[in-house]
Length: 110
Image (cartoon, rainbow, N blue to C red; front, side, top):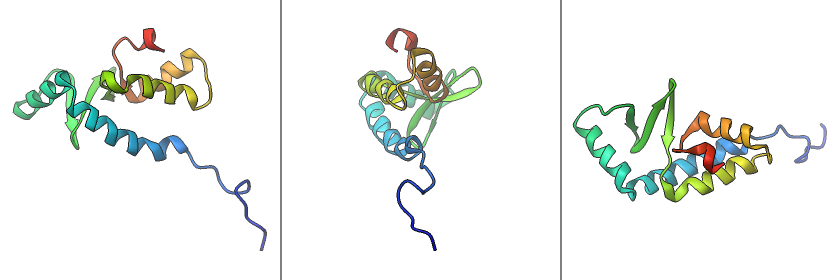
């Protein structure tokens, strides 16, 4: 039997582990953001534009992707986390964010 240490183990994708925690915090932030609350209320009545709600979280469909709507109060944190994943450049950070999140005027904020 060989010795097992932290360096010999398979790497874990930290982003996936923390994504659930971020979703819980995003849900809470969405619940406190009037614009998002209004869209959620409209969704309870009927379909609304390019939005959907699942597990209390608001998503927006953009170019065939279902993206989590990020309230203003969490945008800076989400952008910093994406950049901090590997200190990638602006283009890669922006692309990564566009795969998961809807942040209006993202290019100006990255």
